[in-house]
Image (cartoon, rainbow, N blue to C red; front, side):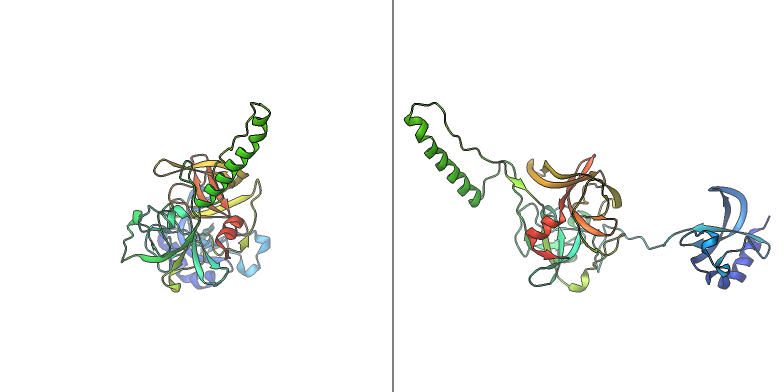
Length: 338
């Protein structure tokens, strides 16, 4: 059995020739594995990105079973990258990291989009992340990292709020448009009730107030410096386009809290209430539901299919499901391009 010194000598002597072989990225010393189980035999470990079948390799790229009397073993290590913390300050910052309105908690920088009119690059996330649940106005400061992750105004200034779609909460005061519709409905009901009253009928028409529904929880920010944003999503890469969700679709996302996770679309065209801070509730329609693949702080993450096409924008979840706004709807409301 070879000693560590013997293997180390072979490693030094054969490094150049071994690293020239296709797929080989490194060398080391470790215990040989057979059928997936470690043995007690020390070997020269040849590190490869992918493990190929021998018949797929040219003769010059095959790693010999022994080198200088020392056993070899091939270990798949994939592409090795430096790990980044999603909650730290990044310049440039990339989608998947912590971001938030200066008075909000923390969420996720979803992706970079372009304004459909000006073509400027903008940051996409949620209303409740960038616009503090409607309690903001255009021009408000956005921090990276978010306040909950140590972001401080004056030190971590990152972007300014551009526009957002207001959330409609259950039981909240209706806006002017909703008030106008309710008034028209009440007037029509009163007019229709004149006829049964004239004929002595007890039948009456009643104006029913509709439940306010939301299609999305979304907002856009403008980076303070164009060079401070990267378009590649952390651990995923570039977005290749957009597509509609379908039941059974295999999907993934990269978020501030849970990083890269994957799942399956379980429901499309979903309707349900989502609870917000301050005991507020908002009802949503046309939503995408996946299995549980997110946690608080992941809000704003982009849902993608296996071809890196954007599918949805994460707005909430539970211990059982994650809820996403369809990206096609978000794009339409906020008037941007990818």
